Image (cartoon, rainbow, N blue to C red):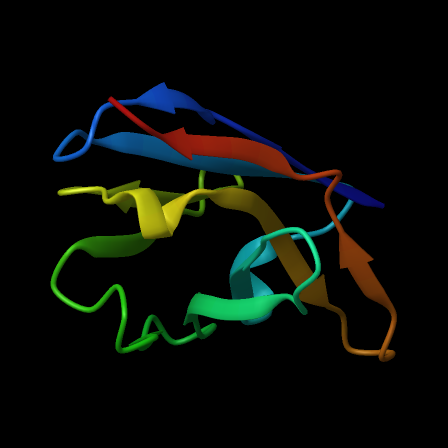
Length: 115
């Protein structure tokens, strides 16, 4: 079982990026799927999650700018990030916990917002 992120990169302030999290050997739609981010010296913070039923939650800092979604057929969870600011610069991680309590983190994808 693994989850793998992609889609990070360098973008100017005000720009957009779309992150993807692909699940292997785990049906992402069955569980809540999370996006976290981490900057050097800080703990990982929750950015957003989507439940198995499709409900979504966002951190206040990204509300109105980020959108989480899931394509169950492709087994991918997305994080659309708009109007990015330098404060969004971080490594973004995908996370899922299965029904047995096993936790799976991706390797992370770097997002850098700079002019």
